[in-house]
Image (cartoon, rainbow over all chains, first blue to last red; front, side, top):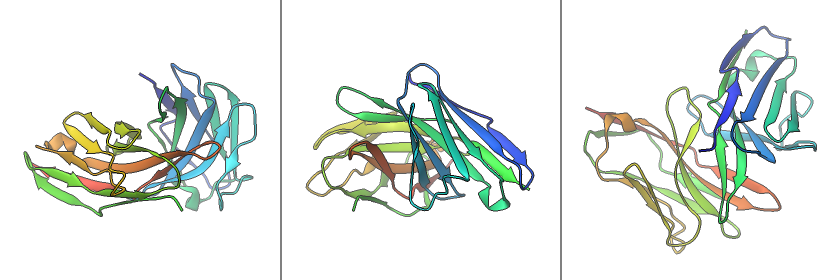
Length: 117
Length: 113
């Protein structure tokens, strides 16, 4: 089946530093990848939609200069949290979209837990 | 606007009990409907889906039927197990010049032995 990986699975960084999270579709090509943020015991909040070879589309309220998204290839998208602060601590989940004959499905990565100290 | 509303949790059941988690939606157009499950510390896994009215999605004993007339997609399982303890998310996906998924708030299920 379609598998999406994320790396790292968890990261601890100091305030003011930047952190890069990778999202890879392992066995299929994804023209579109999505980045979500999830706070404890809450639902997923879409941060941005990433299309290969073009600029990401950010949701309202998400700072594009703080959350840099690059979709360099059909199997890799990266999210860089720049100048991280403790309030950026969260669980970040990516997904890759795959259009089927009758539906569109998303395959989710296992998530990356970011803790900013 | 487009939205998904699901019953608040947590839901606590004994093993072998019947499970229903309600989900209703509002959408412009014709969405596909999904149930995802999230185990602690993990990402989301697709549990089942339905792409058009009256479709029934099923997987691992879970079922949900796409009811256009009531705009609902309730999740059911006849006999839950401890291993079913997780958070369940109802979601819809629409093609609005690009696919977009909207999630419900999630319902946490605890199953006691």
